Structure formats: C-alpha cells, structure tokens
Image (cartoon, rainbow, N blue to C red; front, side, top):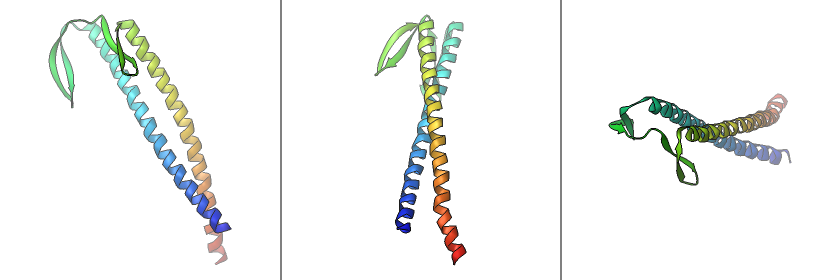
Length: 138
C-alpha cells in the first residue's frame, strides 16, 4: 500500500512540475506582450513629436527610412484580428487598458505559480520522508 501511495505522489509531483513549467511559460509570454505594449506607447509618443523622416521597423532588427504622413490617427487591434483607426488618445486608452488587463493576468499567474510551487515543495518533502525513514531503519 505504501509503495502505491509513493508512486501516486511521484506521479502527482511530475504533473505539478509540468503545470508549473506551463505557467512560467505563459507568464513570460504575457510579460513580453506587456513590454511590446509599453514600446508601442513610447513609439506613439515619439511619433507625435516627429515631423518628416522616421525609421520604420521591417523585422529582424532591420529598419527602413520613411516619411510620416499622418500622426493624428493610428490603426489599433481591438481583438479577434480586428483593427480600427483611432485617434491618439483613443489608441493610448485601448493600449493602456490592454496593459492593465495583462498586468492582472500576470498577478493571477504569479499567485497560481506560488500555489503550485508550495504544493511541489510539500510533496517533495512527503516523497523524501519515507526514503529517509527507510535509510534510518536499514
């Protein structure tokens, strides 16, 4: 009976390890999205100040020169692959709201990460305990 319980604990431990790994990856993705939004907000601020020539990112850390024709409106994704033209303040409001939602998601993920980590620590002690008792008896 004790061996079966030990195997169940080990299986549960492995499942929780996998869950923790998934949560950490999810948190990293959300943090990257927050950084992207912060960069976008900074770019909007810079665009408002600029006149004429700008550098346009084309991917892979490469840029091209371009002319700024319109700086009063921006096209902003609002979800489900839908993008709308918004004035500067509306665009900033949408991005700030999205950033707040993502920060809440990070906080929720962090709480879940802490719960799973605590459970893993407790389970690790339970798994090691019988091993320690067996070596004392032997």
